[in-house]
Length: 314
Ligand SMILES: [Zn+2]
Image (cartoon, rainbow, N blue to C red; front, top):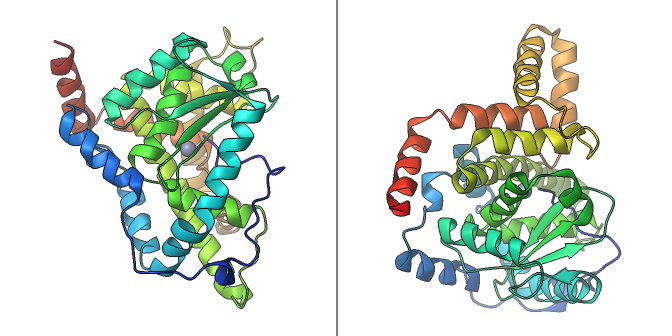
C-alpha cells in the first residue's frame, strides 16, 4: 500500500544528472514487454479494464516529462533496484513453494488474474503494518509485506493487499514509484530550481494518490468481494489484532459518507485546510478509498469483469 521504502538503504544516486549519459529514448521497460507477452498468453483482466481514470490522466501528465522517466529508467533504476533487492534478500524471508506456500499460492492466483509474471514476495519483520512494491527495470520486481500486516489482516484481506501491490506492477507504476522514493530520500538534482522541483513533487503526489485507486480496483478484481478490500483499508486506518473481530465495515463506509457530506458543508477555510492536508499525502484518505471501491463494485465496469472471471472459473 505504501510508497515508503526503508530509508536505511541509500543508493548512491547523488549526482544523477552527471553519473551517466542518457542514450536514445527507450520508452518500454523490460517489465512492460514481459507484461504484453503474458497478456497475450492468458485470459487475464487487462489493466485498461480497471485502471482509474484519474490514474490514466495523471500518468499521461507525467509522461510530458520524458527526461525524468529516462533518467530514472537508465540511471537511477539499476542502482535502486539492485540495492533494494539485495537488502530484502539479506534481511527478509523469501516466500516460495518451499517457504510459506500459502502466500506463494495467493501470489500466483493474483498474478494469473492480473496477467503478470510472478514477482518475488518477501516477508519482513517490522512493527509498522505496510507493504510495498518495487519494479523499475522489470528484472527483479519484488513485493514486500511487513509481519505486522500479516498479524493485522485475515487471509482474504492479505490477498487483497498482495493483489493491490501487483496492481502497481500490472499498471506499470514502477518507474514513477521509484521517482517518488528517490525524492522521498532527499536526493538532490543538480541545477534544478526549488520551485521546479516543488511543482514536480506536487504533480507526482497527485499521480501517486490516483495510482492507489487503480490498485484498490486490482485488489477487488482478484478477491471479487468489496467488503474484503474495504475491511483491509479500515484495518490499515485503525485496526489492531485485538479489535479485528469487533470492527464493522458497514460502520466504516457510513463514516466515509459522513466525512464527504461534512466536508461539503464545511466553511471555505476548512475546505481549504482539508485540501492542503490531503494534497501533501502519497495516498488518498482511507475513507475516500473505501467509499471509492464500494461504489466501483456496483459499476457496470466491475460487473463485466466479474462475469468474465466467472466464465474463466468454468
Ligand atoms: Zn499502493
